[in-house]
Length: 78
Image (cartoon, rainbow, N blue to C red; front, top):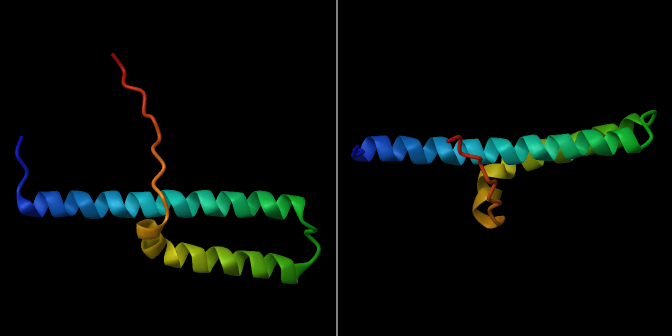
């Protein structure tokens, strides 16, 4: 199957968005675990942490170009 230019562009954009979303989700999971360890009674600490997460998620498309890629092995069924 050969792809047209539009299909190739759409695939590239979807892969870029999927990678950004995966990194953002991982970052949010790490932040949630950090909240479990930190003192939950301090709202200022929670607000600061989620503000950092929000800014990191918004910057994720730019950070995608700067951060190294992580290859995740996907098992292939026989």
